[in-house]
Image (cartoon, rainbow, N blue to C red; front, side, top):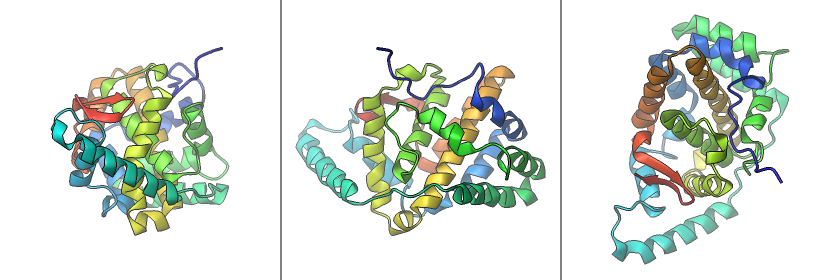
Length: 258
């Protein structure tokens, strides 16, 4: 039996070639940050912030946490996992929702980056390519669903880590790693009323962002701009989440400090 393909990159061909016009227009790290800040503000206001994310990483395997707190961390993790499991972040990803997600980003970019706005519309606008289909190819066999906001956020975070570390072998990311990252992130969303009420918007924006940054990765490799692109993505996660992805490992326990 073949080993499942987790987060396959399709660097040499396939559907991610469709994103090349967009990512070429948004290759600058500054533009990456601009797009990111606009699109996911819904989850940065309380659902995820620097202190909460650091705490989540510590509760899930940070070697720097004292051994005396192990039992407490395990109890907390069990409680939050049960709470997360009882709150659904699932939604129905309709074509209309996907097109609205694209249009929202197109509109946001018009004033600050007209070229990127036009490229995005030309690639993912009505009658063009479906970013949802590209996303499904990314998460194929990973265990992540395409109709759950926590799954979409987990995919985005894992993709960011893979880019910073240039992990081009999707098999290096195991199903256990994926499940653990989702378990780390889900309580941060289920505990926030805004995130719960806007799960569909959040999920689709994260899916679109995942497709864009992966396409940017592909383009950076092809055009010899990988180091600059990696720095841009590293800065993105550092500024938004307080996470220096270069200092994190992805393990069966999720993200842990290296």
